[in-house]
View 1: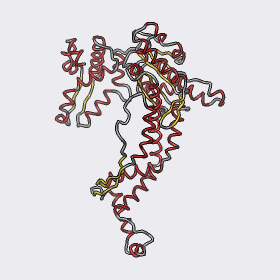
View 2: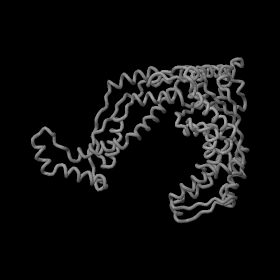
View 3: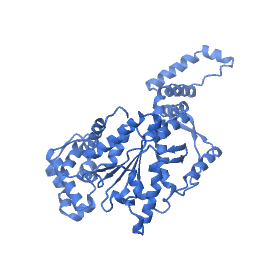
View 4: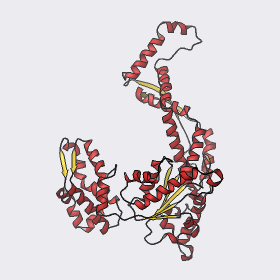
Length: 445
């Protein structure tokens, strides 16, 4: 994280997200500020608060994608939640802390995966020995006959099996493995908002319901994979995993709070706005910095980066309670998307939609070519439908592309070896009637 300067962060985001330069600059600065904070003396470091951000813009313009890609860029734990869900019955109150529990779970899984990758080679060697023990058990060394069997070719036989295991000649052979099955009572506690009690109960009941063992016949390659995973888990120090995961959440975690505009009501207006302000007040301690109890111990949120987002069609950021406004010092407005941006989104990013569809159809042996005019027509249709119906930004391209390629996709196995050109005429032929009828385009696209 520390080695990426703001310009480099923006360049990396540009590979996946078109436009929105102001938003990219804002998150790049916020991320770099984290690195700068780490360079400070300990007493000053704790005083520097995260530069939390509010992104303002309609749906489908890249708000959550910017945050998600930013997290991937720096291997940071990332969680997306909808602020509006906390207005539902049963969700109001301490349950906002569940976002901290969830991101800690994500971090633990992330660190465990990293550690597993690090011990993979050693785990493979150990798993191979266990598999050979199953295929050709070694005699106990304290028995006198062990010496006789070794002399009779026991070790050479084992090495012969090892060679067969490596060259794949045993791949179709079945062996019986004893697997551990974890049994936990299902549905002990289902009330959302009672996580503390649920965590304690699960920990207590975990000891009362130890894992059962079950024999299962599997082919040798699958057996090896299972044994590698078992050995890898034995090599990982879970206390170290939890310690690293907690630190990563506290120092690098990113929580994306979507639909913040839907809880931007104030108490003075009365009615349902009271619960909205209640949600804001519940969010406030988490964003300000608090210690949250998780199944892995206490996690502090003082330096977690919060990125809030909303369309703000009716409300505005100033409708949030003043205390919450103060915790989001950076405000950035994202641009609406039109035909020009849609053309770029379809073609430029590393994961561009057209590249995806070409690759998917190529798996069936179908070559597809999109002409410049064809792409322009797709973008124009997406823009028209967004204007007529609800504007869902770039997400409209997904519905248009699916409808456009419906016939080709369905009949792809029969088109093997063929080349199909998607030009403007083809796009008009497939989508023209739908575009002419506003009712059809509303329901189909």
